[in-house]
Length: 372
Image (cartoon, rainbow, N blue to C red; front, side, top):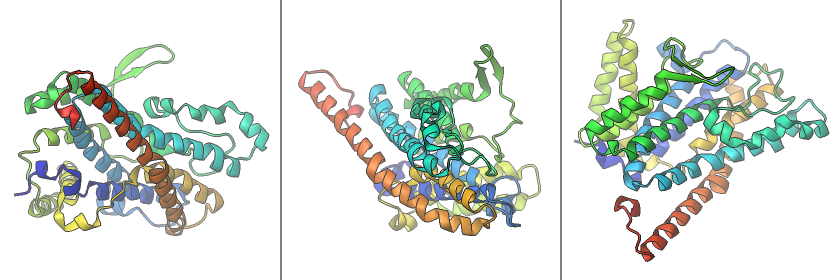
């Protein structure tokens, strides 16, 4: 028996490998979206008929995030420590991506004279990365990619506000003590359904409406939010969730047997989630797990680099465009991790450790879990 609880320690899982493949799936899926149609179809779309590689990569991210972010709060038991670690994981990388767009891609591809480009409020508005991460404001620079099939520059970042929203669900429910028991976790997930089902509107005046569940994100057959909450429940039942290859194979067989029926789609997502867990926990693949997490950098830089290729060669077939863009994307992700993300995470952890040590020296009581 291989319990999920035994695989949550970093040295015992392949979750960084799953994230790397998920980010690569997003890049692969976008190659069909950004280049002109060449008669080929995304592999996942061809096999399933109801979803595509990019959305499956996002679902893998959200499943692991729901599980691991909940585990992070459970370890910390400190709201400020939890928030600091979450902010250090997201904000520096997004800020680096915004600066890359503003000062590299913008000047290279804008149709405006440089003095007008740098005088535009739109250019400098991208320094407000808080609005990008929390409110979903798009990164935009004037005169760039206006004639591409899609004019957006960092489209995948639309998922960040959803992710951050559920960080706060974990934070609030954790502070209420709901993450300590399985029954409490069920209540936490019910609370998490509120931001999923209720949609607040600010302009032209404030009002609240219920979400239209038929209106799914573009290209998606399902929603990311329930996948995050499924990850929370997996963490709650980690001592009872048995992960093995036979179970994954059986669920795949059930899906194949139900193809063409109304049950096929929900069974597929169940099989997909279980397959992600098996892939992320099987010792067979542990040797291939990377020591560094380049996935977020791939996620951030993939779309703008692919947009650049589409701008320069709009008629290029999707595979050739992907092969040209991939080395640049992975190089940017490498620089982002080693130059921005990992230093920010390490700096935050050191500051938190100093604050913890100072509190101990002053005799301030510390939660046992926060000292880990």
